[in-house]
Image (cartoon, rainbow over all chains, first blue to last red; front, top):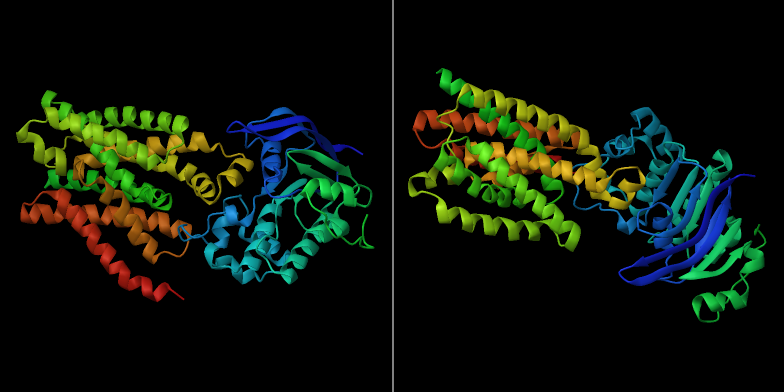
Length: 230
Length: 257
């Protein structure tokens, strides 16, 4: 199996503060890697460093250049935009109307939404739409930061089921940042736990031990191993 | 009559491009910066009026220097562009008024299109077309970077590079605009047509092109009104823009659903 990503001795220092220290890991083609850690652990910065969006030291090698990244929804400007229809938004990525409609339907949205304004969608609709946007050029690798932040439990389950469906159909590699342990049990091939540095890395069943979780979050965490874990 | 047609042509093109690029400036909440940049041109206009060369050349010279300074300050300090613009433009205005001859004050502040030569027409039209083509090319990238710079960069958009190109287009537009509305009212030239367009448009294309249309129409109406009343075209152009904006408020209601 070929590597989708190889990271060696990654270090990120921002504003004089060490955000990520000596991080090394790799991701196989078609793997789902979940990055987890407490708030301020450097998860978002890690994704940005992997994409070259923040300065870093160390080696980052991607197996493909066809990468799509979605920042957390709250980092996307929605309110102070010009009249931007969903069709306009997909055109920013060069997608035709037909392709846009097809993608919207694939994520369970009505095709009529194409003429709606970017800032009039509900949180759940917006998240589905943005997933469609991320997938419209059929990326080999998808980086997703907190895809269900601000979404209720039902919506959360739908988003992950959707991602799972695409992962199975398109054989994508997915790097996902989430706090949700149940998602990790259910969907992750590997998990990378970080808190500035690597705390654990490997299959969830093996590495998500009470000891590691305590080291990661600094407190005891109750957790339940799901049957669906990989 | 020929002179009127020439003035209409120049003003129509400049107004159109100001409305078009203004649609991006309103999106990025930089429309007041158009005014600041207009003020920034005053030392250049002053030099042009004293030494008898074209005001747009003087304006562009000082805008180029000013924008370069603002861009460098932004890279170094990460302060908001508007704050840095205020620092540079206020200094420019102060310097301009040290040297601006009193007899040229009116022209420097509210513009003068009564003496437009054929060379100015050709250069202005070509400059407008150039700004239009470049802006049309960078438009989607600037919109994407407004939604999220990280998202844009991950899609291969070099945000710094496009911001610099965008600022260059603004500089050229303002340098052209000061000829027709002076250093005092360039903010209105870029902001009002785009704001009018925003009230009535439903998607990005409508927004950008209606901004261009309102900018163009306001200039044409302003120049025609000036030829009838004898009042300077600059203020009449801005008043025409304001009337379109007020009319769009009534129209906006019917679009809200």
